[in-house]
Image (cartoon, rainbow, N blue to C red):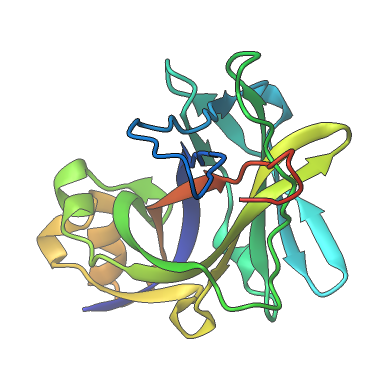
Length: 236
């Protein structure tokens, strides 16, 4: 029995910071140096989670979306949730996530500003598998066993990343664009009669149309790379 349902996409982002280091040395033709040159340290973590922002961008439009952001206890990862699929239906729409970061100590090498450039090729593509989160038939919730049997959906997101100063704060910025061909507002559900709630069975017995709404959660792990600034005139 085919059933039409509305797919609601909740996007969950797991962001993780990483850093790079570089070492400097002065060399001479007449000098032999047998030692280890230590790399410069760069140590950043997420700060002020209440200042995290998320937007759905499409052309000149930039729509703020509600989100929650909770860093882990080491402040090196943060999970962002709260984006519905309807917001990503616009042509060429993509998600922009901004999370403030700060150095963990005074000895950390300054990070350089390097905004993500969507005109370039994406730095990565990530696959996000859906976890069924809920199903209602005729407005009545189905039990967890039924939800667990829903078909798994998969989306692929192109990723751009960088660092940018926004409102005086250095932020890691992630751009995520879903593959348009994979987005949809409807999925086909084949629910056995016995899986329907009692009211749904009555409607099916009368030959009337059943309505269903399914919810899925997508988890998208993304690494944030923070580049460092070389005070000797270059950048690394």
